[in-house]
Length: 182
Image 1 (cartoon, rainbow, N blue to C red):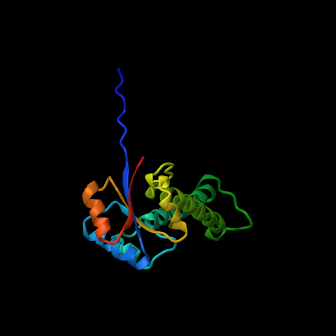
Image 2: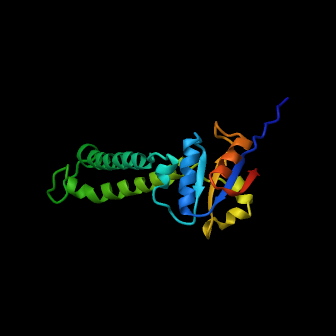
Image 3: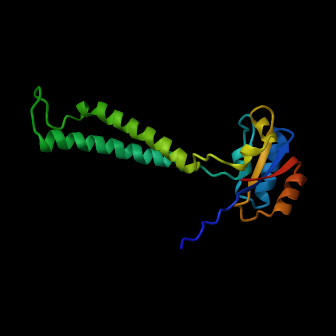
């Protein structure tokens, strides 16, 4: 007999702030309180928000650079092996290892694999696609693309406690504090 899979509900506390400076100060306060699974939402990028949130550098550049190097070396080795080892044919008196003729294919394969790595890597690092999130059910959150500044704290955070997290966001200047669930 199969056991039913237990559904885990995700809970998010959403708080609205008056402007960019208030959001920046609140992000510092949430970070200093020890929260890690929180996000800041604003209609435009805010300078200094990454450091206020304690966000570290992304691994995406390393991923793309590694895949680009693999593509470059793989394309060069593939052409070298085909022309100098596997099927030796003298064309226009060129040497078998004519690396100048290899450059268009090397460039194309490097760019192609880098683009795939950037797309797939960003999707995986951002845990996308996510078709359902508690924030999508908030009518107040629709203002984020116009004039709203918000912080959301997810229930997956080790420090998350409904009452304490709500009180923290209110003490940092948060208004319209909502608890949202999937």
